[in-house]
Length: 401
Image (spheres, rainbow, N blue to C red):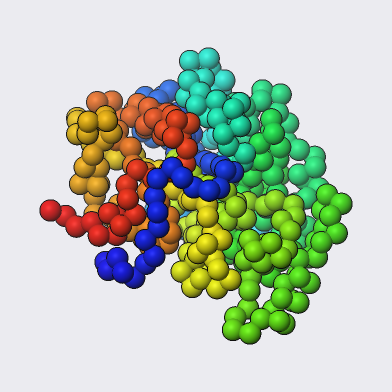
């Protein structure tokens, strides 16, 4: 890949943005489950969830398909057999599928409450206690992490009032837990209408994100009577060469940042992806990533100077039995340990203005390595902030020796 195609960003620990956000993936739940059960067969993985639905509803499951599309296909196969007459039968089936999800996730809450596993979350809790992070975004439906932070946590009535009536699966607003903004980007277990499982729902979230980040919100909240769409319309009338987006106008101080929502965190906070695979089905997250990269590289409205936050993808590399270290005890040669698929993925991220931070894991015990690997990542963020450990241009120019 030609490095000259991209603006090489400066890496290190000197991001001028002080607000930090962790994007918390299902990898943490799966690692804890594997550690406790000493088993790789995680019951609440997407694959196992859909396989369980296959048995319960007597429908086929094809693991080769994109999971969100396969979910839709399974629903339609079930509908075709039942010959439904009610308009809402589709959503009733969704509720049945979500009940299965609830049952399959019950173990993880129990494991998290064990005193022996408090160390698993130690550095996250320390970051919260010392106010080193201000928000958490997760695509997990469960409240496991909230209960780890606050044993008395209860889902917020205020949040329920804020859920979109027209598109309930779009949940942009946070719960507040010990002063932390907590976003469930794909919905919550206690409110099945919010849960995003199928391709249609991911498409709705993507469309709403584009609406809010490009054109602005027209709704009011928290007593704030700002109509963002009116600001955007007026700015676009005055623009000559391009049509400015709402988030660009906010970053330039023309529109005030109103009620926070998770899509804006990719522009206002340093974001750390941890335990999150970012696979092809996460179309809403990919849209925000590519939109941010577009604004940065096109550089309308001085976006290369205004987008000052850092987005870092943390990943674990299986080094087998050993790893090489430099004089500062930092692992080296991790890219050489990654397979070709991962290298291509890292280059895709780097070209979309995403930094990379890699950590080694060792296969002495295949059931424990991710458990300790994620602890290591959280310790790194606690000690060093959200920052890459591999230079941006090193990723783009990497070739197998």
